Length: 114
Length: 112
Image (cartoon, rainbow over all chains, first blue to last red; front, side, top):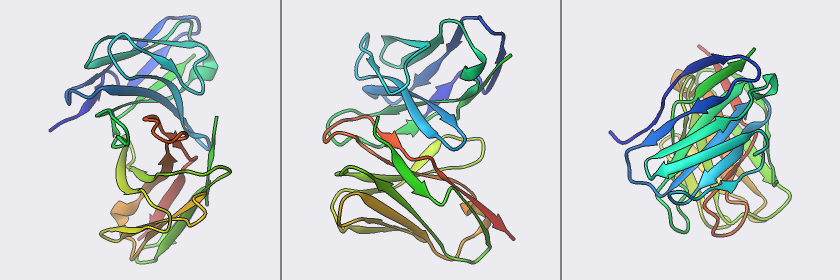
């Protein structure tokens, strides 16, 4: 069964810590995405990647960075966690190519920053 | 960035009732997508719409691509308990773009 796997379902981190959220897909997809989900705001795009070592900012990149060293893995990094980064983080992948909107999402990581 | 506005934000219905929700944008979209998120899971694609006026069904779900290309509608007939979850509309903000912008979601709760 093809899937997107996020390394942790729940994380609790302290303010100022460097936090790594890992995402792995086994579908040989070109595109990978990181969204955060907050009540009343829906899903907002943080960063995305169309290829290895390639990254583009989404709508809310401030306070985040990403790394894509291998095609199957896309990491989200919180350089110095803050309480306003407490949220649900969703990773997704898609095949690539024009009109490729069939995102496959991971189950999410609920991050709490205290 | 562009935003999609979903309505209503939440719905509380009785099992067996029909459900209607909609999504609007201030700009034109060439593709509309509807996703469902079950509790504790990531969203899953339900229906994709590619043409203004298009009406597409997936079981008890029917979605329509508005003629103005600035809105879309999702209907669920004869709701059942497993319909509970959050429904999101989504679309590519730029034609040909592979990233999606999502609406705020409609949370559906069903009373048995």
